[in-house]
Length: 245
Image (cartoon, rainbow, N blue to C red; front, side, top):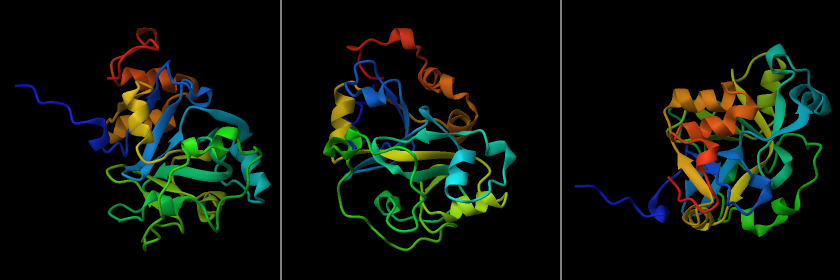
């Protein structure tokens, strides 16, 4: 006997990809792939992984007056993480503190010691409460390697917002693989669930190897199609009125 699928509002989508459907009304997220770092009853927080800016990591490190000690990263792009707080930096990277219980993601949104300002002004969408996560932050203790790090449950990834991760990279140390973005994507309580119910997003979770390959190894221009392929889909199969998988 087939089991009924749980209602959308009972699903925890932390460590999932969101894949934008053609019918998504927000042009900022058109053909986007978002990695969700946290999803709870208070809302959701994630980073787009397929929207590069014209800023290279070398440019970013020059701006914060640090050398970049990793030749393999110099030409890598800085990404648009989302429309919220686009002047602040977020570093998605290999997990360095396995087994650590981290504070909630709301504590990881920068206050002090944040990465240096980027070159982009905050977009109108970023100031819109439509994509602002709500709820009090939990500033509980963490044994993470860096000063402000979210350890993502069930993932081989962490998200760091403190400058010390850049300082480590400047010395040729730090995480092996990184994706650095300006801004983040956030949804208020119940908002993401509503958008999924309106067929604006597909969701998928895969094993760590395929997740890391999509985020760090897949050419940027192929990430949307490769994300769809995780569900056995191709872009031509989608229509604005199609249901979500």
